[in-house]
Length: 445
Ligand code: SF4
Image 1 (tube, rainbow, N blue to C red):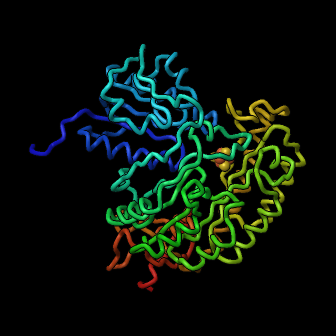
Image 2 (image 1 turned 60 degrees about the vertical axis):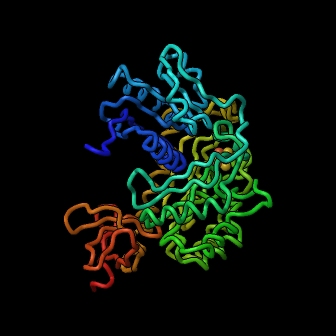
Image 3 (image 1 turned 45 degrees about the horizontal axis):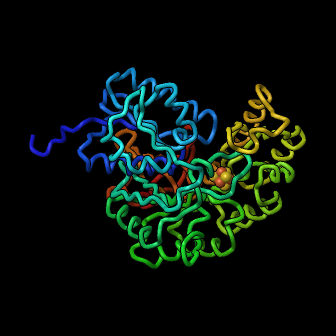
């Protein structure tokens, strides 16, 4: 057929964070331009790419079985290990003969170039950062749309981190904090809107550090003001995780004056014990965090406020754990992401004494997860009877749609006649549907 792409097939499996999701969209974009044909990871493909994650030992451990599975699916395929785990443990992947191409950060951005080079399991092509943290420039990786086909688009505007929290290996595998220039951010926002994405999620490895490396230095609040004044605004813009100390009063003012910025704030807590926070090298105390959450809750009643919590940090006593639980119990948080401590080679805390392991680590994580479920339920209950701004994502059965509210809740609804997917609708919530909410489009009442 004319125009049909008969190029080599490529399947990508993406692990980890939103930044990886965005970068996978970039890979798909450049692969398509170069004549490759994307297929699902379950299919037979000529090339398999595992876009890996290293944030926990578990995420790292998922990569190697996926590499083996890809080789079993097609023993003649080229198998690419890319991203953070490839950067961290690339030499081991090479020793174990698991991939034909091992592309760390930032080598993966030259994916097409590397695929032109022959690599074998015995002698893989290796593109690993030659020294830790030598990536100096933001690797510009524009996309015309999210190739994962979601209503929401993720936009990576920052990479790397200089914080070196003692449990985290990310600064080693992602390099220094660096930012996408504001003009390019604005261009990308317009491009994604043109592609029909109804929501853009600004994301980064340490998003609150956006702009600090630019000359002159700028801030995320400056960027939000530029988006507000630099052309048509996106129907919705969501901020991914922001560190507590970076959510300052100016940011609060900027968000207050921009109703199109989602009422959803993800502020990592990690622990509520000052001694543990200091040993984690987190630059805030529990009082500061509680005050920030209180201010956000007062300024944006009904906003989703979520937190990451890391439990079982070396030396965390039962009392310190209980203090964290009691602290979270009192705060108006709407969900928790719970991470049991996972020693990462290269991170300072990997060698800290007082490791909490096995059943005790699982118990602490389970208790926090149960608390997170209660918080989530209570938050959803508090929304019954309210009107939420919902962006439809998919039709689950004829006439029934599910979407995500500005305040980060899944809502089921029957749309009205003039319904247009891609534009937020107002839905009056009238109850639960499973763990999620259900309601009626406001104009239909
Ligand atoms: S702020 Fe801390 S936890 Fe987050 S990426 Fe940087 S070092 Fe890791």
